[in-house]
Length: 221
Image (cartoon, rainbow, N blue to C red; front, side):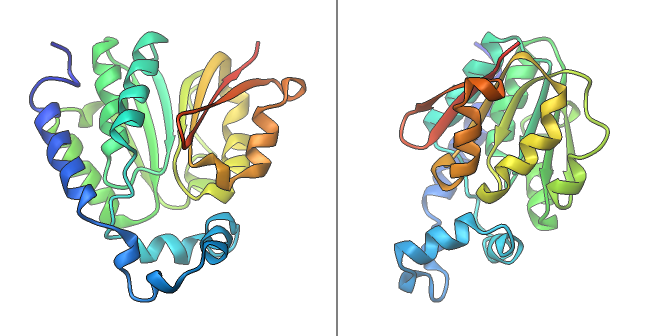
């Protein structure tokens, strides 16, 4: 048994995924009236994201079970010791990544979340999973919190915050990415500028779409 598939992490994730499946941002007042074009505009906005995600502060916005398993497998297979995550939310993806660090023998996961209530929830979940000691949660706008005091070498990155900021977050982290570092971007179809960059060998990346909503990229040497 490994950390991900045994107690306390496995039953905790089962509960969190079950709770997440019962909550939808579309239940917010007015949400059902949003057109696909309106949703795309909000998701791609570089100016409205703080208000947009503040309205979603009570929703887990969790990765899928498959994406969570992918994160764990990638982090384990590359023997990651340093991981950076953009967008903690309730900590479901964070639990998968921290479980991999535990099974890799330790390390550091730096994650950023600007909603204080979500920071508290994520901290509680990580403590319940026995993984809080591996995680540094930085509260605030990731453009500030991930712009300082980074590890010299980053093995793996998860981008799962405001989609329009993916290029800017990559700018902050790029100088610390080791050759072969993996980047997982959730819902990257809302970040065309980011996709154009990581799909360009000339810009130092190789990248493929994975499943329906994940872009998996690697930093070239």
